[in-house]
Length: 114
Length: 111
Image (cartoon, rainbow over all chains, first blue to last red):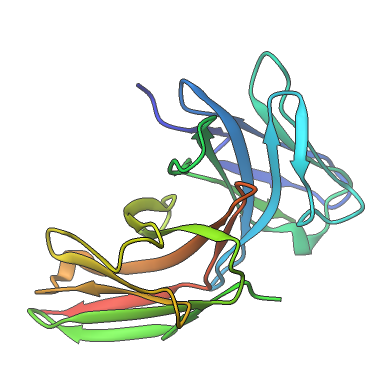
């Protein structure tokens, strides 16, 4: 049973470009969470999705950021017109549908905006 | 607003000593409290977790103590080893399934 898979592991984008980060949850998991981690800081909640639904996006910046979790395929975190301040590690976690279960994290995507 | 407050920010412990990391929360809607361990360049890995109906949980050298009335919980690492050197995050899960994390504690265990 493969763990949470994120790709790419490292992503370099120039200012103004778009960044697409992918997350494939663990088998049997239908809940996905995205977090951002800045250097020397903790994990900041961004968005919580179930299949085809955004449950909570209270941590997402209002502009340029969007997330989806389609019926088929991975969850995508999309950042349009990236700026230097978007440089961070972005982690995805997944959990099963049943409540009271653990969330398992992927290895993260390290985005660098140059 | 930081939903889960974690301290200390960094901790240095001698090999064989006890490492103690503390967390506090306010939201009574939290119903599950995991601890994660993160090594540089890696994703956080679940270490141990507790539910609020239990006051203590022990797994090997790792123990969570939970004080529901004080809304505090802590991680104790007994017989700390250099391999335990990592960043530790406490977390709390809201009944709506969202997880909130502390700001992390960087633990260094000196040989």
